[in-house]
Length: 169
Length: 184
Image (cartoon, rainbow over all chains, first blue to last red):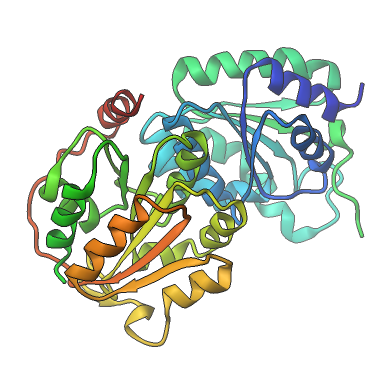
């Protein structure tokens, strides 16, 4: 099974029912699968901060959320992560396709990609890198328990080893 | 129209509707006008309250959700108008308290003091129920309609800020649980 199908299945199994995202090449198939499933409230946001806000509101109303974005979106999401998700202790799962790491072709994507591990650390957000499709199910299970047990967002980073990364068009 | 007076009118129109206020003076004035367990006060993440309202509106289509935004805050998240317009949650009432100033940072002018028109931006984003209100009577009539008729609504209310100095308890985590219990 390809990683997108594995991920869609794992999200469904873990009871997620709201997805806020900013469109992304790597996550495109995953997002299509989630759309097709029909059980997820899908919100295409204009910016990652907005997506964090949507998931926080969804949580207040009983939804279990997933934020799907490119690594560069981490930079755009920081103030919302701090002022809403961490400040109010609102959990959700972050599924992030890596930029600026192995295989990157665009030099200006590198600074944030290089900084990302330390950004997660500085924010106190636990991040787990996924390199193999077979690790997706147990990682999503564990991250879900961790997020909802600790009332904080947890990040799963789709490494370029897993996804193949973005195509140079 | 003075904001805290507008909020006092708003509170009298409400039953169990959740109200989300953006950081700063909207939160102070909502607390002063009528603290209730269905109020959710935000303290940071400037600009995101409209998005929080959207998420809650999608999660709870059985409830009418009221968002109290500010002009400076909305200018920081104009994209949310496009997202709301695309998803068309019928139960979302987005009220912008347009004071044309950044009040909590010292009263500097926002762009709505000049040429920027948030109602026109809302229409351009694709929203159809967009109202401009200038006085308390209009505010009350429009909000009353918005609580009954399908939205999403964008109500841009020209207001004067207030000098409320009420100390709102800053306890976000407690407030989150209290709010969630109140709307269950």
